[in-house]
Length: 142
Image (cartoon, rainbow, N blue to C red; front, side):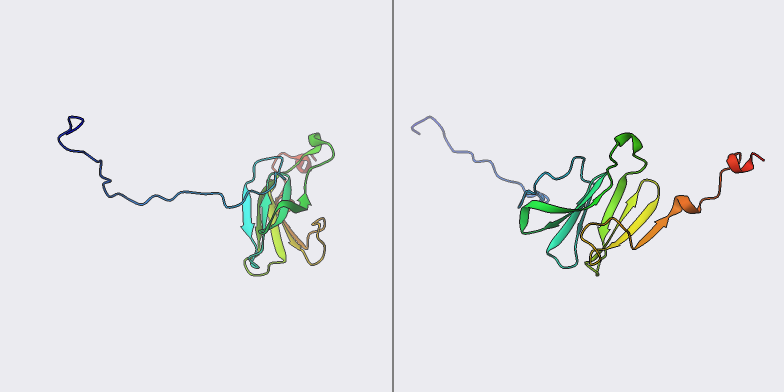
């Protein structure tokens, strides 16, 4: 009773739901000018892609300081920007195949075996190209 305390009170932890916490295991170089909206891990388990509004980059999990830019949709003049990338994904089994979709509704499929830079898609599905003209449009002006 040296300090005048009758007993020492230690707070007890009452059981509760376990909480998950995120912890960064690796930080990858800042290769995006805009917010990253898509991450997709390749079927090989060694690479992944990241995408923002104008670029898709290919990364190796074990190399955090550099990447390969596989899609660059940024026009030379930003006033000519007609669409942005909305999502990008690897094929779930074929690691050499990736696709990205745009704000116009177009989906572009690429085979990385054909070229490291995806400038010519293997397949394009473009919803805008299949839409009928709107009533009252130029086609109805006759």
